[in-house]
Length: 165
Image (cartoon, rainbow, N blue to C red; front, top):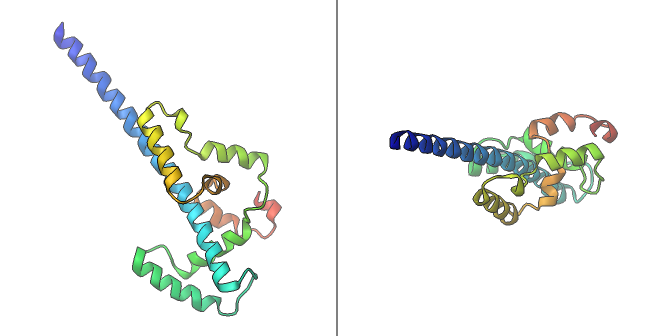
């Protein structure tokens, strides 16, 4: 009888730990994705501010993107090709922060955020809240971009803003 109880308790422990691990992994993936997309938007903004002083085209843009690409790839590894940096620049221009959100985008945004109160483990909820606060990327900015970077790469090819929505 004691062995059966121990086995049942152990089985519950394994189930509980598996659930905890799965929730933590899902929360981490969601947060990393939204933080990266917000970071790419900020990179695009910084490039525009530096290179173009807010104007839409700069004559020396290609040279700057080439140099940035070399320096960023050397420092952080792959992912910062001139094409990717150009996409980040277009991303910023295509999605100015002042654009009000459509109801469907607000709903997507709310779903993509990690809602700590929805997690059944208070430790994870507390840690997620701390990460979101300390990361330096404002929660409001993260909420603006609920889709993955690959989705935005496709959307920025569309010229008309209303079609991107």
